Image (cartoon, rainbow, N blue to C red):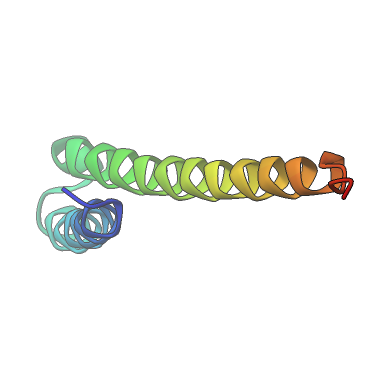
Length: 77
């Protein structure tokens, strides 16, 4: 699966679990709905980790290519 699809699914899952937690919290209380809150937090943290990891990878490749271009000497004719 593509990274964009994975991030979209994680964000949707986090939002969905959070809405379900709010509804369950109003009905049954914190103790009975705590697991939904934890699933929501895990989905949001995984989304954030995935997003930052992707940004760091793109940043690293941009620096690597710019360093290679700067180190290349011109050809002698």
